[in-house]
Length: 79
Image (tube, rainbow, N blue to C red; front, side):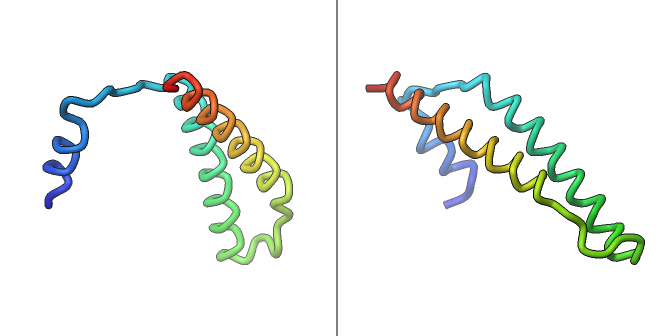
């Protein structure tokens, strides 16, 4: 089954829920990804060695927890 066929099959005659809050998650994750890519490039160039990414790890965990919370709220609304 092609992707387009799958999307049509799964979305027709079903309720579609738009979660506007996901835009902020997307923005934050994009920024985190950009920072990690920049660190990776610097490491490959030998300009830095073993960067401390603990702050990045903490931010990813915060975004993950917020996303899980939002998904829990969405499930409650559907019930």
